[in-house]
Image (cartoon, helix red, strand yellow):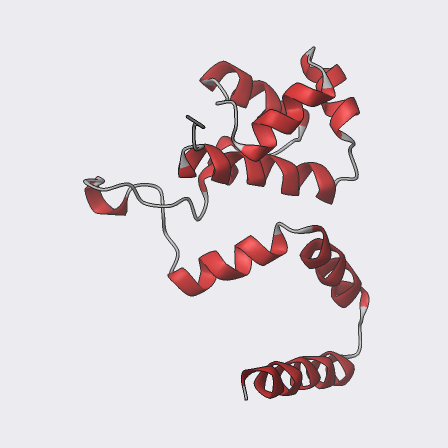
Length: 136
């Protein structure tokens, strides 16, 4: 029987991957900084292997990001008090899922380099129009 990764483990792993990619660090380099193989980093990022509290602290320091970053937008488990870690709406979760992909990160970086507000607005309008066309 195949074990399914816990949604929180997958979320934290995806946030590790997103931050690592944002700063241009390879899995191999992160693994070296943590004393791990890149395969272990892959397993953490996929949520296949859980990240211990001490290892998450070490990752946080290596990636120069606060611990809370890893839990932002995390799925709420049943019975969580006051919504658990999640502070976002389902729409925000969808957006953060996209940003965590290589395409989302690349699009975000390129879009942020556009300084002309009118050009940015036109790009957003174009994407909205294209998306509406797909839904028809």
